[in-house]
Length: 192
Image (tube, rainbow, N blue to C red):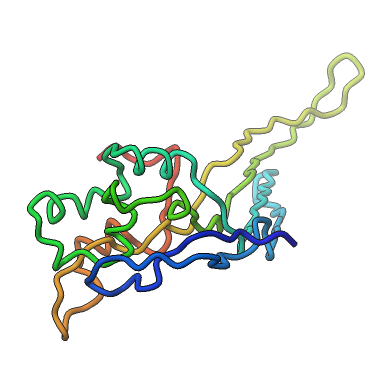
């Protein structure tokens, strides 16, 4: 199985200048785990509900958009939490991994390699059969179906900035809500 290799930051969690390390093994570029689940339920009133979900994980990929944007100095959403400290020149709050990804003079394209783990609700279908006596037909079925209604993926990075204190938690509550370990997305979420 092909592995993704490239440069990485040797001191990612230190509040210091990033140290570039060559030949880092990120992991495979194809999923090492694939789990598919499907089920069908018979409900009262002649309804049936079926669903199918899929998880794939353990693999990594290069984000062309992140890599190209950051090395060209474009302000990028994955760095928004760090920009206030970078702009103020206060790098004491910014870990080496974030400096390497968010300061274009330190960035290289290899720093845009991320985990690609995801879960997707591939299909949900509600069906109802009706008795029918029309043109030789004895029944009809009406279906309401939706594909890819919900998905979550492993976040690219943990929260990108925090105050340096020995007894501090890994992130503030507001930061944790923006940078959760898993990011949920749905096309039907309420506007913020």
